[in-house]
Image (spheres, each protein chain N blue to C red):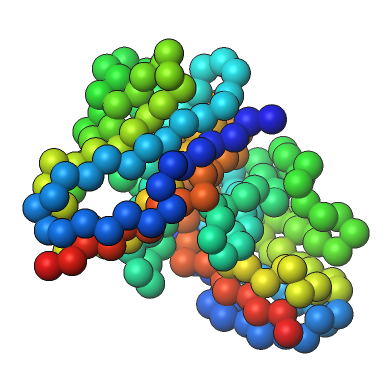
Length: 112
Length: 114
């Protein structure tokens, strides 16, 4: 069965620290990959997506992610986090026309 | 552009009672999804509609959950009777068409079953 694993349940960083959140998936065939973010009290929002082309994708708010097909990974990175990045982050995958399969999420807490 | 609307935002019921949630997707979006998000987990698909037809309901507990999208726009999700383990956030999402990559999510309905 298809699945998504997020390695970190809770990450605590100080402002200006670098961030990397791990995501691995188990999915045969061509996949689309996503990172969603949920700020406290807000909806799930799309951070970035990959479906083809350059495996390094840039999203909103300075986030980027790299798709490494051989490792079935799609890790999220940000060089310098801010207090406002405190949120829950979800990695998700799908194939065209199908629903998203989400990981369990990583809670990021950034202290100022 | 208005987003995905859901109501109610919060609901508390006792076990064995029934409850219904409503979703209004973004105008023109043909594909609609209901997800269940249990605390500490990622959202999990319950049912996917394309217009008013069901595309995937393989993970919907059909003995107690039902959903409909009669006119291909609004959708309702019902639970009858509710169990304690149904306590979760119920998310509605929509996309313009089935092949669209981005799903737009509503604010969710937080259900507590006591």
